[in-house]
Length: 550
Image: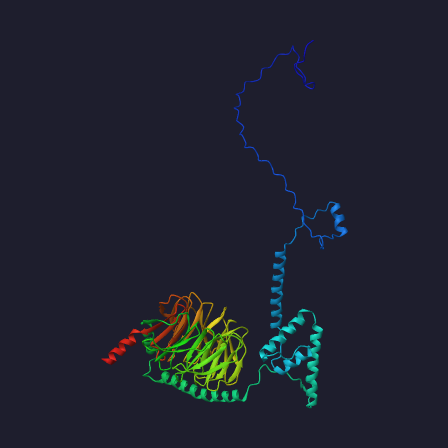
């Protein structure tokens, strides 16, 4: 039995008697070695989902039947996790802060009457206490605003609208009794101002009378300089700037054991006043910077100090919500109480009869220096008021604050005549130029802005410092230059002609908090958190004085 050498049954074999064909010889194909691949790591098995831990007595424990049925059908919605107690408390705290913010935002958008009688009437109709113990008009108005915002957020608009309708009906009834009517358009609208006292009216008359005289003198002097051929204004400015370039440190003295907050020269330049966080203000003699007296009386830190422009009386402001008036011997003359929060700055009116104070209660106030009577409580800023300056004529006041806004007020009429918008962060320093139409402001955006009151717009923006500007002052005689103090530990002098830098006063080792220029413009004083007083004097002026002596 023969075995078929071809095991494949489908193949066919050639007959044996056929001539065998020899295939042509082909060269052997070289074998390419197969690369050895590294072993593949085994794929890890998927982890089992973390089982959800559900509280026994809660909504998650009582799962609806529908969800259970859907799980049985194969609808796997994924693992459920338990929210920890800390996460829940954090979410509640976050939600509460959000609701408080929305409540304040809603309250700020509501229109609240400014007349105290109308505020009391609306509180009475809402079923709230008309007044609380020790509550003042502004606090009562804020309380009404928050109550109205709360009613609005709780959906009780009907109750609020009903109260408004009752007020309107009461006003209409009063109008009808007086002989008016809706046909005559006799609906009373409360004006956006608060009625002042007779003392304030007399003060407005006095300010108007004095300011007209001072404005006439200032304009006459400007016309004389313009028309007189012997007057060379450019030469005067160049001389003043050359003197400013020669400023150098003349004296450095430790002012207190804690950081200094303010400084001010007397009107004759013979004294310098400083205040510190200890609450004590000190009087120093010039130019030797020798201690004369200490003004002790504030219960909290002192925030500012100013000399009167007409005599040697000193005003101090403090975080204890009061301002005080002193003489150079250290005797307390008056105390000004009324602010609801700590004071920021203080400023004298050019007449020396009135004192202005700014506070973190969002107001600035005007006081009679002799009687300590509060003449004016001025609102208008949405946040704390920080800086205050008076026009050289005495007719205007300018305030700035943490709302990044500066406002110009007409003291003769009580109106806000300008709102200067441009800064993007809080404004801390403000100063009028002696020329009467330039106003400088500086703030936390590190810039100093020059405003033209005639054109009612920003004239120039100076990128002045590397940190916030804490104070700003024009040279008080002619306003040929201005000085800025900053938290970058320097003070800088700028030309008021083209607002270019003239001189950098560097020497402090910490934040410079305040600056002042003596009346003749020949000396500058700066105070800082390094607790030192530094006096800068013009070398050219010293040479001139030496020549006069010779």
